Length: 384
Image (tube, rainbow, N blue to C red):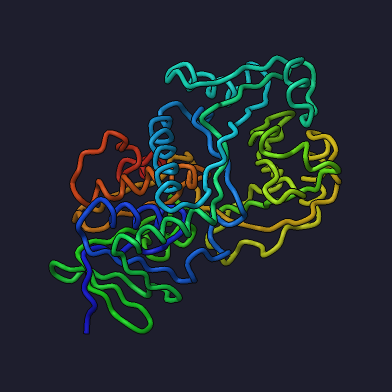
């Protein structure tokens, strides 16, 4: 016996929660969301308290419209659910002139006239003494940037979807998706669903349901760390904005203290290994990685206890080109969003909008043909 729905969203994490929210609120479709764990679980790529949000984007100015739309939607979701999601203290990019990511950030600001504030080395040291910087370092504060409480945001998205009439099935993994005539049959352990369309947003698990992604998408690990300042008030949100730092080949990011005793300071230098499966990602952060991250953190920031007070290992799906996959299959029935490569959380509401647009046949100006699997830079390179 089938349970019938118009659309199934498989995976209620970063993007799935946002796609389900928008499908439920912006259409009359009967929507079911399926999550293999519980909603808001600790295994997803969004886990780890918070994420940085940037409007001025060093990965490329073409992403800025997606980011601006996401910001609107984050604030809308915050208003509708009454949950504090967006940390609006700005995002400080600390770097040296001429470094390509920093120059692209500045280009994003110029092209879209984004509100900002520049800091010379002297001004940076005076305004944000938490940052230890070398001579010649400068910074720009992206006034539309900040942070997002990622775990709360996923819960809020699903909450809003349920309030708008959506159905959630959690604690059950999808065993298979099969197109049968005019319908798609989704097999779970205890039930079978029949739907007209599907959105696959299973993150690092995407290739399990969409094998065609295996030559394009890999899984990367990322270690998250929190350090205790001797004076936590120096790292409070009103005096210490979310940040992105590049110095001497080290890339770091983080957000102000949200618990009044620790500050999130993350280094990517010890987390660049790629895997075929989530199951291959180490469960814990190695001691060598912790020591490297600690050296970087205490070199870049003042007044931090050198040993992180907590740390955890996470994962994300990545493509070589770092271009995400947002694909509608030729039948027009299945949308797949994967390989978000660090773009994922900040873009999640806009990606949910794109999923809704693709399913309903709306021509969305935010969509890029490069996102489609057949045109994806990694797929084209692989074929040629």
